[in-house]
Amino acid sequence: MLNYHFLLDLAIILIGTKFLGIITRKIQMPQVVGALLAGLILGPAVLGWIHETEFIKQMAELGVIVLMFNAGLETDLNELKKCGKASFIIALFGVLVPLAGGFGIAMLFNSGNSQPMNTKLILENIFIGIVLTATSVSITVETLRELGKLNTPSGTAILGAALIDDILGIIALTIITSVADSSVSLGIVLLKILGFFVFALAVGIPFYFAFHKYSEKQRQRRRFVIIAFSFCLTMSFIAEHFFGVANITGAFIAGLVISNTTHSHYINRRFDITSYVLLSPIFFASIGVSVSLTGMNSTIIIFSILLLVVAILSKIIGCGIEALACKYSRQESLRIGVGMISRGEVALIVASKGAAVGLINTLYFGPIIVMVVVTTIITPILLKLVYSRGKNEELASAS
Image (cartoon, rainbow, N blue to C red; front, side):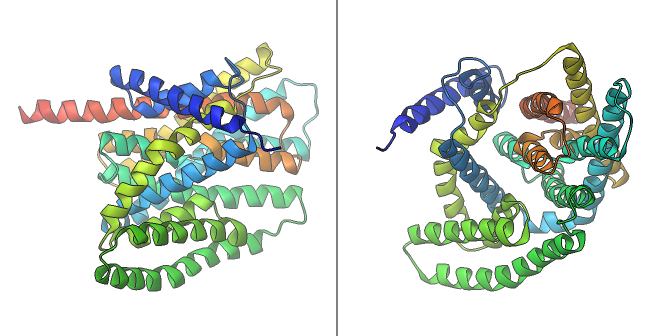
């Protein structure tokens, strides 16, 4: 018999995220913070009204795909090209610094245990660093869109760096898992990543011209939304299924391809409505709903705090300093560093893949969840502060 309980789950999520979103907006904070808190409060960690189900997980996945597709539609391609080199450098150090920081804190934590240091333990320590390299661009994108800063130099740099960060994170994850699991071939994974971008160019350029030409001739614009969404979903599936690249990367590239076509603004507005009404609230709430903390003793709590501090500072320092080296201003560099803090669902996915090959101790799951939730919630708040501060400084200098 069909279970209709998901209807009640959806109703609670939509009302809860909107209610807390309004409250956070009233106190001059991005509404996405309220949506994240709603998931945390409604989920098992507090009230237990909503639990993570397969339906919520799949709808949340669709939500983040649409979110990244919208980001692609709104991205200035020329601006993205200009910051391509800088984004790569920022992403590289945004991986290396957290990797070193995570490895160091795991080594410090494990040195106090009676366990002798061996190859397996060293790999586990490295893997904690790899978890910290992740960046969840979806939270930052939604916040930047809400602040109207997505197409600023710092916003474009964050977006480019975060996407490159995902690719570098996949490579780092593959290297460590190939050491622990002989069935994983590093060379094949690198070839597949390269193959995806070759494929994206080979498919994206003809699709752009065909879609652009077709859309200029047709007056019925509603069908363009269906074609665009089908292209988005297809690129997302191909990226993940055939090339092992995150599906959000495929969705973003699909948005980029359509961004300069005749009716891109019309398509973007239609997806904005769908995302606002249903998909985004489910995605943001699902992060909080997935939180369930058990087995947190005093030692693990201390480790969680240290891990959180390293997670925040390593992105600000690693990305921010390199942004300065790439000729961004101090204010823009700070914004870029803050924009890369959120780990979101990406870190949880990396952790689960490590668990599948025995690279992470179950003791670490609690601290990782704490780190993911806190970095996800504070990133929109910090972004609001650093962008507001820059605006106030500009007004003061102008007067």
